[in-house]
Amino acid sequence: MLGTVSSSLVSGQERRESWRMFDQQAKGVEFEKKADKKLSGCGFLGYDYGYAAHLYEKAANCYKVAQSWDQAGAMLCSKRKAAEAYANAEHIACLEQALNLFMEIGTSSVYLYAIHCKEIGELYEQEQNLEQAITYYDKAADYFEYEEATISANQCKQKIAQFSAQLGEYQNAINIYEELARQSLKDKLTCGVREHLFNAGICHLCKGNVLKITNALERYQELYPAFSRTRKYRLLADLAVALDEEDVVKFTDAAKKFDSITKLDVWKKTLLLSLKLMFKAKEGEEHNLN
Image 1 (cartoon, rainbow, N blue to C red):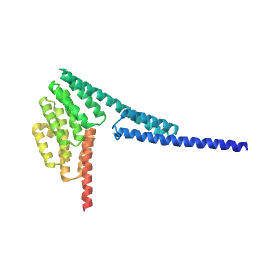
Image 2 (tube, rainbow, N blue to C red; image 1 turned 90 degrees about the vertical axis):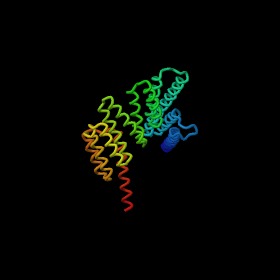
Image 3 (tube, rainbow, N blue to C red; image 1 turned 60 degrees about the horizontal axis):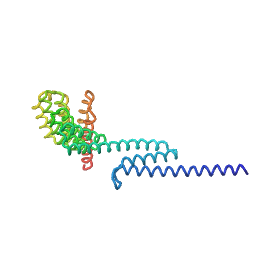
Image 4 (cartoon, rainbow, N blue to C red; image 1 turned 180 degrees about the vertical axis):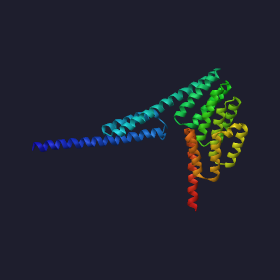
């Protein structure tokens, strides 16, 4: 009899513990959903990184009680990211406030404006908010140019060109890279000329107009004749032919051959991959039509 009572008590405790764990798991899921909503900007007040971090912590605690250790760990990682985003947002707000204050009091240090704009651009870049990053890098470039800080201005312009291409604004990127190439040629920075023309050429490829690519390569050869003897020029020419012939294999082989000797950076690989995927999608459409 005592054994039966004891067994019944243990069974009851186990049920209560199971229900408690189930309840905590459900609460964890609810806190996680609320936190995700705060980060997506769907709430009434929009993005709220600080409160999202708080909700992720509560979700993690609930998952710990439910012994869902993987989910608890994931929530703590999400909390850290939200906290970093909150810190960035606070930093951006402070820098923007400082910048507005400097403008109001009319400080004569234009270089100081440039530094602040560049720092704000960097923070937006970390958040992958490329549109806002472009806005502040553009302001910084203007201020740096006013102060004749050419190197700093050009660094900002390179960021603008890079992000413009990532956003599909290829012509803007082309214009900047060509301007930087002419500046590098003027300053006798031949490595810079080759790299800027190469980047501009890749952006031309992404626009998909073979005639314009061909014309651009002719212009680049006239601007800097030595460019036509480089592997970068040859790659652009080979990719243009593959694009004209709509030959995905030839396109892939040309890129792989170049990359096996001179590694393409992530930015270039991403743009070329998007172009290759466009090829394949077009091939698929034509196959379906036939």
